[in-house]
Length: 114
Ligand code: AMP
Image (cartoon, rainbow, N blue to C red):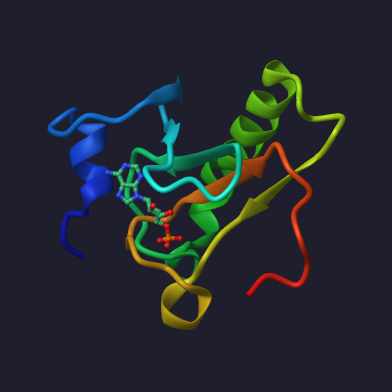
């Protein structure tokens, strides 16, 4: 699987508004925010889609989720609530083939999504 724009962000080849980083996870603000808070959580080790994730990725997937939850708590909107989304492939609306979680917050989010 080829490189993506997120690979360039990880390698600091293009700028991003990074809000969280640890040894396995990077988080930065979405360029085209869909809510007052819209942050993307990505693994530094690229997995193209959720469908490509393997049993050995279970800890990494858990770390992504907990990184998003921890950010929400630290930023003070966890109590109010938020949404974490993964878009998988074409019908899921995925445009960047480097697995990522969208963290959306700061407004009441409708359901079902479009
Ligand atoms: P998805 O459609 O689920 O694959 O989400 C990809 C997201 O990446 C979209 O919400 C884009 O707005 C966002 N995006 C694309 N390029 C960048 C970038 N250079 N920096 C930050 N976010 C980006």
